[in-house]
Length: 151
Image (cartoon, rainbow, N blue to C red; front, side, top):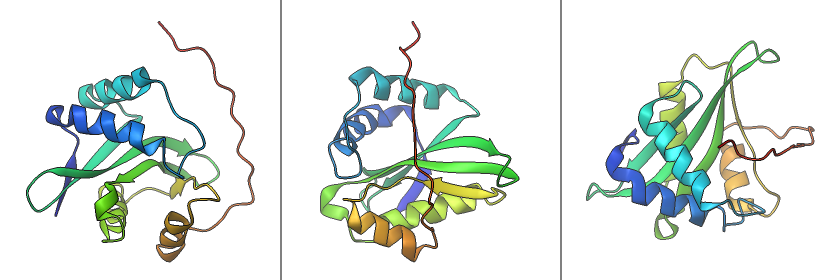
């Protein structure tokens, strides 16, 4: 298995799996088609705010991705790497791919002060993995305010 940065050839895979991700127990709602497309274009053309790692199977085919959001955290005193989305193809779940993606994030962003993610209550398997990897539960309650998309 190889883990690498996202490439132009990953467009169909990324957009398809993004929509699949938002239909899993990891999420409580879906996203508009254009969100995944805009994110892909942003990733491809470079941004200091996001990154995406792709896992390839033994045949060199993409089988998982990890979408990252990069922010500064005053609370943590440095770079905070948000693991926004981790999506592994159904038939490959439970084979250590998620763990390897997270290890690759740690390796690539080894100076980060904090790694952070969200997990739904219903996503028990993912929660168990994250605890095993050292993530701790927070007592924070998340709140959002969505605004209309620009342009």
